[in-house]
Length: 249
Ligand code: 13P
Image 1: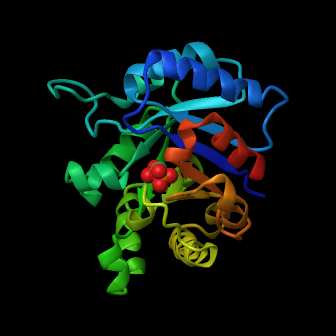
Image 2: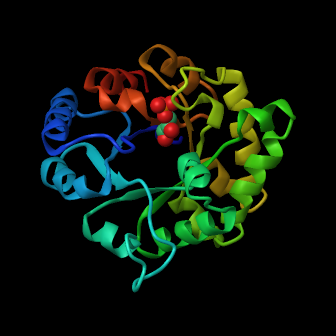
């Protein structure tokens, strides 16, 4: 049985004061424990704030990106070891906003996932098609190429240390959600791709859905056989909404 993971991707939002309030509300809401794994991914300058506030709580913290390099002259980048040093457990790699605005290739995303794994972090590998790609019937091919690039770099044992997130680009921040069946269909494609590498491990990998997941649609999305959690953007910035999604899980 796969555990459900509800992860908040705060993107480039927040401040020390706003985070303190949000984290306190989330912690208070989960005082009695959570029925699923819960994660927040703040902007990097706030990772130590999360470490300070969340240590010993039911909430884990992670980063939104990581360097593909180990160390050295890469101004502005953060290594996986540095994130581990901030007690991160997870790091998002290959988010569509990084692919689009920073031209991250499938190969670079795979390098980032590898760096994360080597530092003991769980990479959350994001894949997803644009609206145009969906309309052209290319969804399965696009997400397959994106995930395969990562799978090609991993040995079978590493499959137990990755999370996959399907985030259709057209559903991110738009209020448009994939229907549960549309999402399930892609999740099934992704799981069968993993199964081609190792059938047993494929049954254990958590595959999250992201893209306008809200309290009012979380339950039906999370009810699908291959949807094992959510990667939440906008709704993760409001404690009531985030807690409602956690409660739906
Ligand atoms: P929204 O929930 O705001 O659509 O964002 C989803 C997302 O990109 C999470 O990584």
